[in-house]
Structures are given as C-alpha cells and as structure tokens.
Length: 112
Image (cartoon, rainbow, N blue to C red; front, top):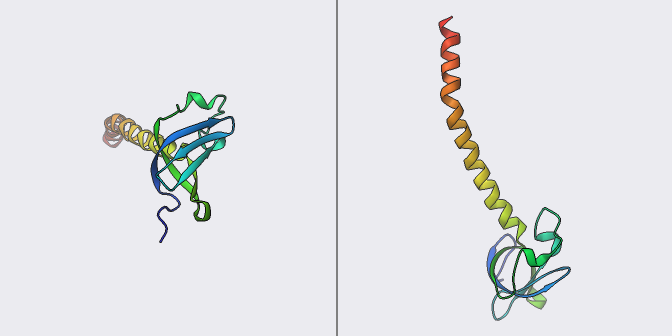
C-alpha cells in the first residue's frame, strides 16, 4: 500500500527555491516539487514572494512517483479551495442581505 495518494493534502518544509519551483521535504522518505505553474493562478514573478526557506507549507499531491519516493505538488490547489470556500460564504451573506428586500418587493406586487 502506498503511503501517499493523489489529491491528499500534505505538510512539508521548503528546502529549496529555484526559478522553476519549490523543493519540499515531506518526511524522511519522500520529497516533493511544486512547479512554478502550481504556485498561483496569477503570474509568479518571484517565488520568494510566496514561500521562504524552512517554512512549513501545505500542498496537494497531484502525482506520486513511488519508484523515487517523489511527489508532484500544488499549493494553488489548496489556496483556491480555501478562496472558493470564503467566496461561497460571502455569497450567502449577500443573499441574506438581499432577501428581505426581495420579500418586501414581492409582497407589494401581490397587494396590487
């Protein structure tokens, strides 16, 4: 049985930063790479704006290479998931604010 699987969120420590991505130590066996394209949906000019050496980060596994104990990782997947959750909660707040106005408007229409 494999220790890690696709879609799993793992915690690791940033061990290296290159122009093309972030190296992450997951545990004593596994390492990972977050390619620059998996950091953000926005243009990434400087990876150091997103992470620092020795920083603990969470990342989503997008592929597992068991033979070399290597994980391909994404941090934008975890960021987007959290962002969508916040946006959906804000969306309900907006509905909650608008609902009384809609009810009043409909009641006025029925009274005519």
